[in-house]
Amino acid sequence: MKSATVNADDTITYKMSEAKHKELMTEMKNNLVEYSNQLIADGDFPSIKEITYDKNFTEFSMVVDKEAFENSFDGFAVLGLGMAGMFYQLFDGVDSEHLDVAIHSVDESTGERIRTVNYPEDLEDTE
Image (cartoon, rainbow, N blue to C red; front, side, top):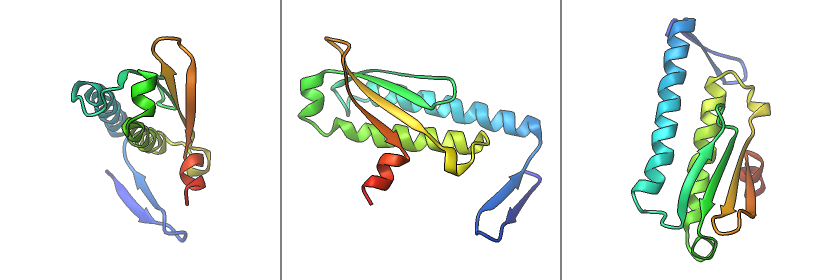
């Protein structure tokens, strides 16, 4: 990192080379992909069968066993994906006012979208 500046509004601006930023984004992408894979592999969220995402981590789809998903706490996995997606976007240069992550829960047997959670909007609704 070349420098960090605390702004008047208490935000911090980091300056780094383009090569360092690319390296950082690659590392963040790899970590987010690994996190998504671990949500399934660890078995902590057994109703979640598959997680897919777009290249900018603005949209995730979780294929789930609907009945098991609705009768468990597996929906908490959505929070981690939403936070990670927003964090990735921030470091990719998206203004904090324009962050947007949609996480769809999709029934594995019908392909029907059960629900969509939008971050940060749905986080703000819980405050």
